[in-house]
Image 1 (spheres, rainbow, N blue to C red):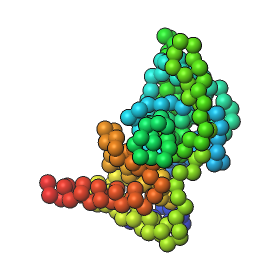
Image 2 (image 1 turned 90 degrees about the vertical axis):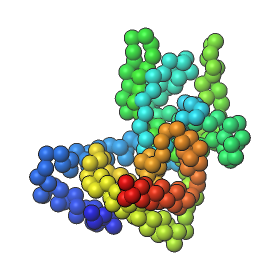
Image 3 (image 1 turned 120 degrees about the vertical axis):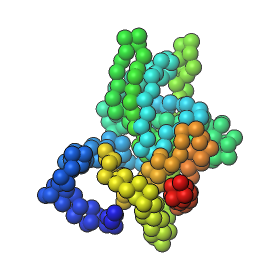
Length: 261
């Protein structure tokens, strides 16, 4: 498989998909892929770098990496309040909350400079007959907590409400950015070598031209939910290159195991 190496090549591949779609029953519809990618981009990645007064869902030991999906049943008073606040908003962060795997004290105790979470979008929700909320959601950008306060709940644990900065990554030098892009390309090629046709079976396009998001795409493929230490490490890491090197090593090991079996 020849992977696109520039935006122009992606445009050419898409044009071919529209003009001469593959004659196979399981081939994805190009229009559907584009619509879903565009909706996902606009929904998950709001404009701006800082946002205030967002409710936080603190779930120790559970990480939600960039791009990952999850389903929750909310029943605690503070998280019913979270759903109400998120769904009542109509601004750039409507239907959004912060998912935090570690509260501030635990994040510092684990050697991190502070808590880092993800800005999560509620993609669908249902208010159940017993008053609980069933929500489906997807994680967008990482965020660091810049300010936090607690909203008291009568007879129950308080709701954490936070201000966040969405930029968690160090801006790489141009030469480092080129190295990261080349390493991401090698990771893509390893996936293709180990699982031919893998990308053609995906319901939506991976973030091919954003190395940070692509590194989390690989983490999602490679890390089980119970690998909490690794997931916390790469959620907090400010280096895309280090995350990609970890993924590249994992992919090499995976491919070697497939070759030896």
